Image 1 (cartoon, rainbow, N blue to C red):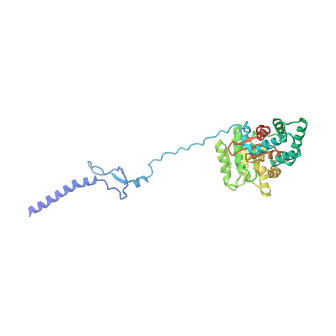
Image 2: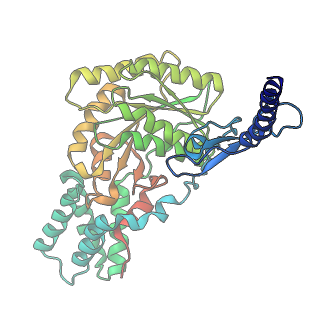
Image 3: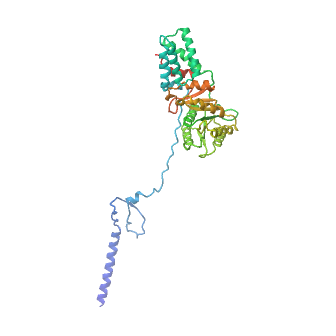
Length: 395
């Protein structure tokens, strides 16, 4: 019996020893691949195993590993926007003369071909009048121009194309009144910046023109701040701010649907505090026959004038609207005392004569003209250069 007990004890000891040898080997085995068949990623982990025993690795499926967040996120560097340098405005109108090709076909090719005929009868002069009127020069201005041309041709006996072109150019320049003051009042004074109010009807391209005006001023060495007082059109403030960021100009804006006069007031105050040269205020587009909207525009001007007088009030007119622009100009002038006109989209119309009509009817100088969609396609208006562009080559 004692032998049986001893044998059992020996057997138990042997089994315990065998288990002690087998279990560590089993612990060193890796887990089987994931059921999805994907790759696995091995992560090391600490173990409380006894000394001398190898620590088994922790195996994590690749799908899980890919979703783990990084322990340390790399900082994202924000790239500062590149500041654009607008090209100088000197001679810009000359460089853009090719954009007047549609108007040029009326003035240059049309009028010169008639005026250079060997004999100018009444039908020919009526044809000349029709051409000028169709170009929106206006009836009164056309009659003056044609009468002066008829007298010069009769007295001088002009017949060559070059001579006729020179005489026509002189009459058109005279009709544009080159003595008008077309300078922009953008110089700070009395401890505050010059204030420019930009007004116009819906769809004239007013906010874009504000951005281009800012580029014109910066190109001529001015510092600019924009006031986004068009609070009724959701994209207007974003649009003018984008224009400002391109040239390093700050934009003051208010809540959507807020009081435009309040935004304009804050913009001028900010301009005073920062010491900029010029504050350009974009106003909401409005129809000239809407009394309430026009009254609101008058309010914007009155509130701004608490800081001091408005130096420039520029009316943006779409050249493609032709004679309708004259009525717009008249009503806006009564409300805010327009000091100058910005005539846009001249590159898309044959009605370049609207420049003459605006000035003759209203006594308001055209100070800037838009001749394309590019950011620097707005040029200071120069009567002689404009007429040269309209007439084109004398050949």
